Length: 93
Image (cartoon, rainbow, N blue to C red):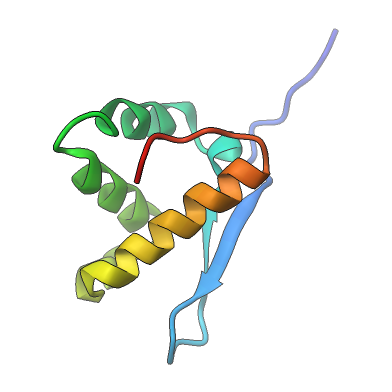
């Protein structure tokens, strides 16, 4: 019998300029299925950014609401790139 862990093990880690806190977002392969499924379905709709920002809020908190759109886009693009390097495909950001 095989046993599979339930914990997230692979993260995209980053800091915001002027903030010592390190933020951690699970890479796509380590993301809970329900969250990733929602992102992938939304990647083909106008709701894509809203769903992705919802994901960021889950892991970063309300600080997301204070960030410029360009910073949010940069974080999402870097997350997609790091997830791809780890072998997981994500919808367009």
